[in-house]
Image (cartoon, rainbow, N blue to C red):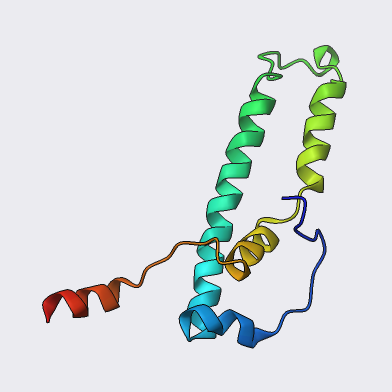
Amino acid sequence: MATVPASIVTRNMADFAKETGNVYESIAIISKRANQISVKLKEELNSKLAEFATTVDNLEEVFENREQIEISKYYERLPKPTNLAVEEFVEGKVFFRMPDEEEETSSL
C-alpha cells in the first residue's frame, strides 16, 4: 500500500483499455474492486474499534481514548479504495473474467 499515491493522479484512459479492450469494462472492474477493498477496510476498522465499544449511554462516562483516535487517524490516512483499485488494475494484480465470453466458448 505504500506505493499507492494518496492524492489524485492523472491517468491515460488508453492504459485502462489495454487489459480489456474497453475503457468502460475496465472502469466497471476497478469499481467492483474498489467496493471490495472498501468493505474489507471498513470491517477491519469496525473490528478494531469494537474493542473500545462501551455499553454506557451516559455521556459523562464516555472518555476520550487516545488509542482509538490513533486507529481512526491511521485509517483516514490510508489511500482511498479507488486509488488502491486503480493501482492494482494498472499493475495487473486484479483477477477478472468475462462470463458472457465463457458461455459463448463453452457452448461451441
